[in-house]
Image (cartoon, rainbow, N blue to C red; front, side, top):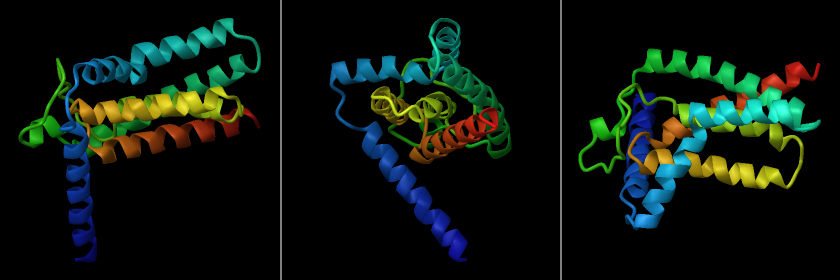
Length: 178
């Protein structure tokens, strides 16, 4: 009974935060920016970025990018397995009055693949201790918020996706550095 009550409270929080972000005023520039920035967590961008840096950048960027690419691939497999098991319906399909972007996804929403991807590729770069780390972290957070804003994910989808991506990257860096 305690677990059931906790789950109900967590789901209520998830929906309240979702609605707050999704129903935020819709200035045209903000909407357009988030529709564009959300793709920073997409497959095309994350694969292209990690492989381009691995091929053309000097060390230590090259090695770090290979770690990012490995973490991206592994976290994609983990996320796909979780999505198939959980089968959570996307918020725009489950809730009323949700603002949704063009061509919304219909696959399961939990966990967020974009959040997983962006955190899996930025986490190895965070270990470098560069000024770029702050920029990458802000970029990753914007991707997560954009997924909620566009009606595609609940906050918990993005939190879990961020966790899966980060932990996969941490373990990947640890194994590769052995």
